[in-house]
Every structure is written in structure tokens, then in C-alpha cells.
Length: 353
Image (cartoon, rainbow, N blue to C red):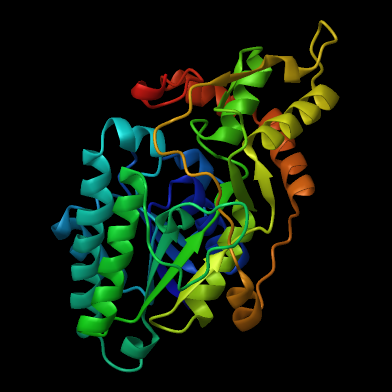
């Protein structure tokens, strides 16, 4: 049986991956998560009663705890998703991003290498260290072009710079120490259990509350959108079949401006939960000052993972958004629990309002 450690497994993408590994693939899976504000054990509830699931609350910067957990669980793979991820928060307070994303990755790499060197064959040849990163490390695109696995790095925020640094560390461990690593860089994710500091869940939460729907600048910034469950399937394929030392880009082939995303959400809310005054939720849209260093456009060329590993997204943007809105409408208790924990539907990041 395949045994996998998932760091950051209580996060948005991490929990989707754990649900897939345990619930769909039947892999024995151990989650290491610090449980910061964005960590959510409720997102793991669908698999928490499975004998295949284990959880350890620990900080990846705690080398002793990480080494002990790895030694006890004896994984075939470590899938590293633990990270601070919010761009606005990284601009206000970079320190947490430097600590977790760079120092934490270093601590995990050291622990993984020591464990891997102690394995006997064939366990050693089977082991994989899979680092999950972002397309934001490549900077910004103009109106044309796409990111690919050989795109130059050009990060623009403390968040993307910290993820770029961790990517480079992972590659260094491959070239310097022969650790069998894999790297994936994904586009913007959306779907269930997404902490509502990010665009799509935030707009749903504020739309339902009748609040303003703040859009940065003129809303023309473009992102490629990927359903989180499609991402989870892609990650599993890379872990199982990817070539050590290689990078794979994962995207949904769904480029949309931020304004178009919010307008799509408004249309779905108008249909499913119309305002009592009969007016459109689009009237709640307002435009706010752009954030510093806001990258104009991201677009991902995912042809490599499609060609080599046979992965394809199952959700197009329309069906994925409809399913996402429906999930939030059917899980109001989850949203209320987020608010009860202290979150009030505001943009996180003090310098941008």
C-alpha cells in the first residue's frame, strides 16, 4: 500500500489532495499541518474516520517533530503543500512567508533526504519528494504567451519570491544530493472549503451578505482558473508517474479577467439566491485601489502533463463555478464557522484596505 505524507494537508489544496488520496485511491495518508488561520480540519472530515488517515499537528520548521513523524510513518512519498499563500498578507508582513516557505522547505528537505538515504532498495528508488508550487514564481505575462516548465523565474511579491526560493532549494537537493524530487506549478485554484480571503469565496460570502464586492483596479487582471479537485488528481498523477527532477505545470485552460469572474458569480447568485429588492448582485461591485505589484496576467501551458501523464481537467469554468457556488450555498454552516473564528469577510492585508 502506498503511504504518503502531505504537509499542509488541512489547507485548501492540501485537504482536496488528502480527500483524493484516501477516499479515491485508498492510500494511507498522514497530514502534517500547523493549523494556522487557514488550516481547516472540517475540510478533512470526509476522510477523518478512515483507518487510512492520520493527522499530526506540527510546524514544518520544527525539524525534530518532522524527522520523528517521517521516521514513524515510513512514507513512500512526501507531498509538500505547507505554505503561506496570500499575496496581500505577504506585502504587509513578509516574515511569516520567509520563515514557512523558505526555512520550512529547507527543514523538510533535510529531513526527507536523511530518511531517504536510510532506506533500502527498492524503497529508496520508489521514494518521491513532491513540491507543490505556483505559477506566480514566473512573474507576469502580457496579452499573449503562456508559462511553461522552462519559463524564467521573475517573482513580484514576497509570497511569490518565497515560493521561487523554495522551488530553487528543491532543485538544488536534486542536483546536489540526488534526492528524487518533483515540482508542480499550478494556476489559481477554486472549489469547496476555500478560506474566504481569496477572490471567489470572498465574493460569494460578501454577495450573500449584501456587502460591496471590491475588485482591484479596473478588474482587467487575468488568471487561469483550475478546479481544486482537478488539481488534486493531477498532483497524484505526478507523484505516481512523474520523472524525478522534472517540473509539471497544471492549469485549467480557463483564462478570465477578475471582473468576469465576479460577474459570473453574480449571475449565479442572481439565479439561485436573488436579492429581495429584485436588483442584480452586480450592483454590489465596486472598484478599489490596485494592490502593489499586481501581476497583469497568468496563463499556463499544461500540455506536458497532458501529454506525458494523461491528465485532463474534468471541470470547465462554467460547470466548476456552478458546482462551487452550489457547494457554498449548501454549506452555510461552514461559512458561519469561519466567521465565528474571527473572519468577517474582509480583505486580509492592511496596506490595501
